[in-house]
Length: 311
Image 1 (cartoon, rainbow, N blue to C red):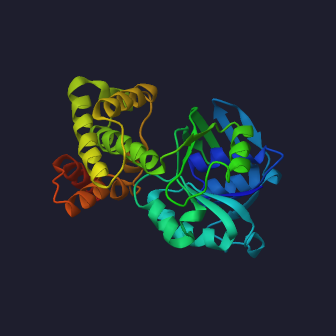
Image 2: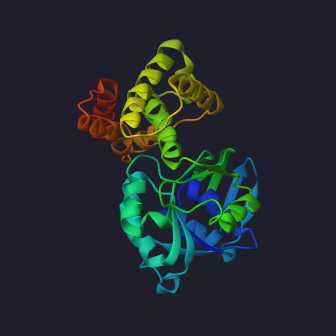
């Protein structure tokens, strides 16, 4: 199976590395900057959960700073988009170049709206709702720290591929040690992760704290209220979420499991990069307005993060 990983940041590089050592795959990687250049010259180094070195001759790579080689046109059976949220639209255009008529698309980027954008480009029958709970960060260009072993969660919405249709792909992920997990309800899958992100990322970023600090009672109560604002919007959108008690339990569990992590939004702010707030809390605010629902905490957090990134 030919699999392309485009927008190869931390998670994308981890996924590419695990797929590249599978004898049943040909892997195509697309990245940018010094990190991608190191992948092209020196290969991929994974440390942490597993120590792994992948030689650059075990995958094919193209660089965003150079025109994409036409040899990759139409070659991918599955395409993972793993970029920051702001880059998804651009990479969907690249995905069209790499795809053929039966190619499936998985967008693992954080936030809302990506699934709809992919469906608009490729049709619902080719887009796979997906999220990941693997944790990774970049020690240096070309070197990824696999900090937390999670899963690649795959689901289904109306007219998207079935579990049976994805059996070969599912097997590839299993063989590669990426722990695929099938979730029947794709909309619930996407929203469940978004609710965690809107509750954890902006509050950790504004306070400059690691995730575990959010378990302090007052901090956790605020996280819960932010999440439940988003849950009310999700239910108005027709998403069949767990009840509030289960959502709160899930939030506590994720914070406990990632207690030493510095969230990606805080890393972005400290490094002067754009954040994903527009695809998280800002999206909650915008969707709520359609229903005449006020989401004051999400609105406040959105404005604070947006203002932080101006300086």
